[in-house]
Length: 83
Image (cartoon, rainbow, N blue to C red; front, side):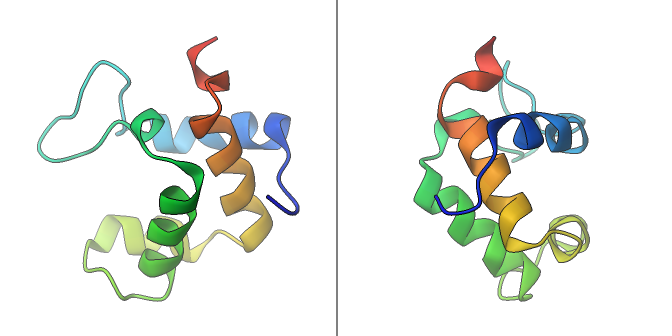
């Protein structure tokens, strides 16, 4: 993914991890490590453009640029978050 940086993704991930736990989803909140990178990016961009309705995710994604989304996708989908 163009512009993706694994360490930057790790840095940004703390906000995501507050709700998206690896141990399993709670109340419909998915484990981000189960998504592939393309789906991860598509979903965040859909929240950012308000195509998807979750108000919390719209707010979070609305603060992210393409580089940040790509870095988060790299971090969560390559197994790096398991370390």
